Image 1 (tube, rainbow, N blue to C red):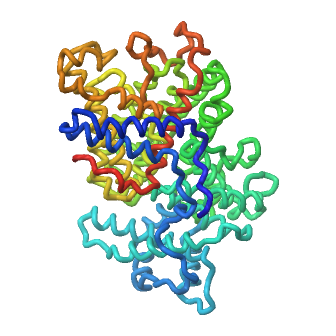
Image 2 (image 1 turned 30 degrees about the horizontal axis):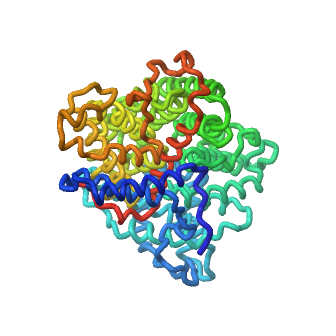
Image 3 (image 1 turned 30 degrees about the vertical axis):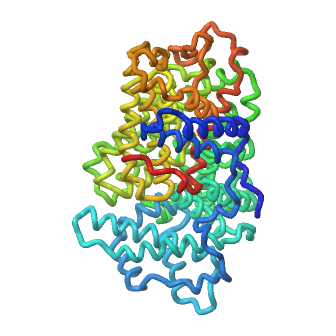
Length: 595
């Protein structure tokens, strides 16, 4: 068996064994077994914790890990009918321009046609990277055409072409050699594969593809201004491709808890604003809006990379609380400035109202991405402020941002879930599952600590919004299952508080007098499990929760930072990462929670 894949530092394994043992005793012997909701919740929690120390095998870092890889040749794959491809290119010219602006800025439509010819009319074979670019491009184009027809009430094109191209793309990516020569085509193919891996919630595979692409790009000098070629179009494409890799690399750093492959001090090329203008000048693009949006995405990616480096990396967690708070304050200011720029740049002003923008217009996609980024920005601010709490619980600013993020998510849900399923699909995988979605966990912990019924309702609405999305992918289904389990646990805590009628600062006190049935629930076992994940706030000597700060940062709370070492923050972050890591694993051992 191959060695297990590294998933970041974790200090939770020893706690997991103890918590699993305690939960096993609780489920098997407790007097409340007749309470099915409690029993189911404990069984699910025990199953999750018991597997916490297990690492995913490297054999899983593929799109189809269960399929054996025979001797492979891309020419053996069945191509979609040429007539369907030609009809697509002929009737969807405007939509294709918008699509290539957004997804293939490193390739022009005419050059994509040349790739198609090399595949359909080549008798000598073609490399796997060419097949990746062809099947990847056709997959997205056929899918886009299908959704436009469906939305506009026309008879949609056959979904069979979408399925065929998707299957062929995954087969080609699974067979793609990562140790290849440094060519532009290889970089573009790996970048396409990494983008697709995000959409399919395969962050570990995305990391491998991105790292390989970055290595090739560096060998070609993509990252250095003095190494870029003189050809203006090729220079622009390389610039755009490099910054696309940069954006994915920095997001993966925070998502997986690993140092970035690209270091800011090693990059000297300018942002791709001029590159987009060059591509438009030479007929390789149609919307300057991507220049403005790309610049904002790069700024955000830089912040993401520094959040991991300065707040959640092993070195950051070993540093003093004062240093982390200072870094968090600086990063929070940068995020607020970015949000202000995002709302005032001319590009965004052109996007309102969205209903007046035609579906195939690139501006329509830009508006959808703007709304998606609002959720991601609020989630990131939640993560920043979570690191700045001196106490074991989130400060009030962290809680407020978490609430705003879930409310922004609901706005995206109501706008796109029924109207534009493909945008909802992309939003869910990029803005929620790909990002460390801290707001849900922050509010879950807050509900556990305070039994806040309003926040429980926010969790409930979030779980309901992603239930139907569970059919989109295995990762989306796993995400819904996990969120439903934690919502069920939070609901038990709120129910206990309501029955006891006691102060919210200690929801479990007074239960034996107020409700003997709820008093039989082994709350200490629940707490042991939640502590194993870093999700349960410790209680003080009197049994109450350690208080939270009201302000944005705990610099004037009157508490000594040395009283609160980084272990609690590290456990919380690693617990959050662990939960996201489960999205790549088989969760069949969990009972599906009740709908």
